[in-house]
Amino acid sequence: MKLHKFFLIALLAGSLVAIGCGDSGSSNGGDDIDPNELCNIEACAVDSEVGRAAKAVCVDEINDCIATGELTEAQCITLGTETCTV
Image 1 (cartoon, helix red, strand yellow):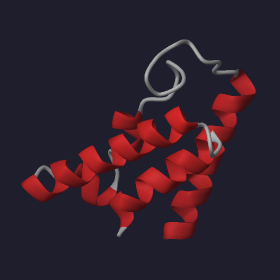
Image 2 (image 1 turned 45 degrees about the horizontal axis):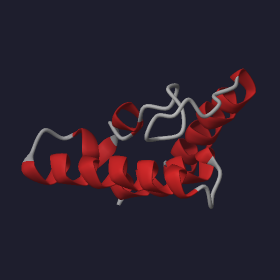
Image 3 (image 1 turned 180 degrees about the horizontal axis):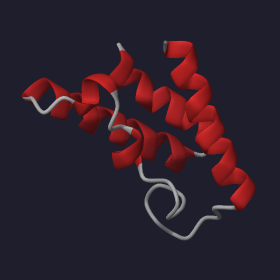
Image 4 (image 1 turned 60 degrees about the horizontal axis):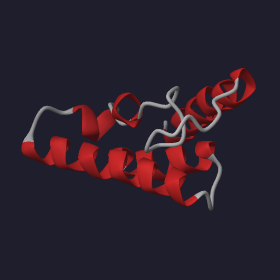
C-alpha cells in the first residue's frame, strides 16, 4: 500500500513539474503545491490531536524541504508525507 501511495505522489509531483510551477515567491516554492492538501492522507487525515500534529509536521517538512532547495519538489513531498504513513 505504501508503494502505491509513493507512486501516486510521484505522479502528482511529476504532473506539477510538467505543467510548470515556477518560483512565485511563496513560502513553499510555488502556488501549485499545497502541502496542506498533500498531507491530508492516512494518519494525518484523522481529526484528532495526534492526527493534527502529524499533519502540521508533514506540512512543515514539505515547506522547509522545498525552501532549502536541496531536494526536488517530488522528493520533498515524499519525505513530508512519510510522517502520515507511519
